[in-house]
Length: 362
Image (cartoon, rainbow, N blue to C red; front, side, top):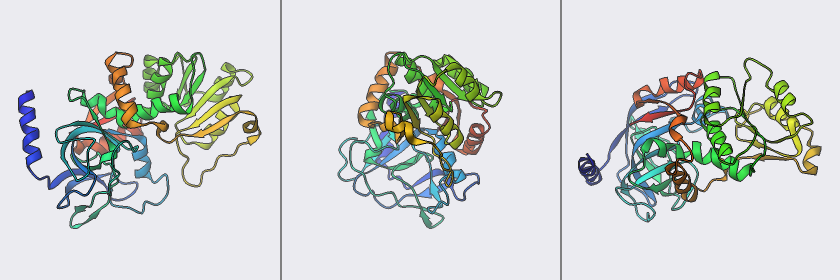
């Protein structure tokens, strides 16, 4: 099997990649279109062609489809920002990866060159794409969005390192700076929220409280480390939280929803020198209203940018944690779909059918 796979990779590297299947965002609030896209004649400086093996679907992609940040000026374009694959070809200047390497594909810039964005064609017209896209089975990726990993690393687990794990663990380690015995509320328990719960457990935080509107997510949250769960669809979450944290004794409140009222209530709930970490982003035009006096006396509100992670340093560290059985990534994976089923996969995330991360397997 290994020999056959190696031969296949060598043939792909010798063959020029000219086309790829892809899921394309053509119009906001509409299903993605699955079609064939054309590659440019040659790679530019710092670009890498990767055969994508597995891609995760992050909630931020759903935000792009739904237009949470307003009108999309780059339509039509490709999507996807976490995955795992193999390097098929490298452009000039690339020196952190080579042909045949297995790599994690991540949206946050890491080591290497930041190249120009690729110039794909679709139906004879320009198709926009960023420095990384993973909803296509072959992709032109900027070198600094690829991190080499051991060749025998499980691709499914590795794909989570592109965003869910690096962001979730990074928020806990770098933004919250959570310490042993400190309390944390994680409001929103999707793929990134579940990663935060595992990170908080690994640091022996207590209590670790997961809040969500889907019971299956809360069941999974409990399984991987949450000490308490609250279904905010069935009860007033902040009424319950105020009973738990009398006299505003909560150390860290993390919001993954971007809902202003949740952020405002979390600000009130947190103790005078506590932290409020904003991971979710409110929709354009929805503003947060807080009385900021507490911030002059030690309370902090921090907007997280990918958990302040450094992919080239953090990904090997987290993978080592997986190897030592300190964390179980497989529990975070709910279901795997094909690229042709990607709209069904997205729907399963919208309606809460899937609890953890949803993956596309190429």
